[in-house]
Length: 142
Image (cartoon, rainbow, N blue to C red; front, side):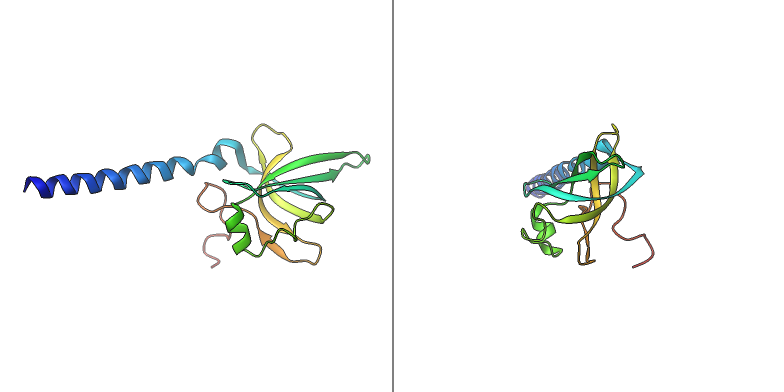
């Protein structure tokens, strides 16, 4: 009886520690970005960082006065983006894109990307799942 109880306790402890670490890792969106501040902008890629845990896309966006502002757009992991159809060649500097996403809470030129539209019209999902970000698809439309 004591051995069975010890085994159950160990399994429960391991399961709980895995749940806690994964749950704490999924609060990044709400900590940095605001789901009530959607942004859409057209710009030119200046740099793409294929790094974990999130890729970063840097985009020059022209203001009405002709000056440019560089936005940093957080996206999913490199592996997730590759599985969604991105390649390292599809996001080269100089590529003109449209980004839909959510602005940072501090109002800076940072956003959590949701969708990216390529010059040929293809739309790809940028977001990572399970981060607290708004749904990829509106619930009930699947």
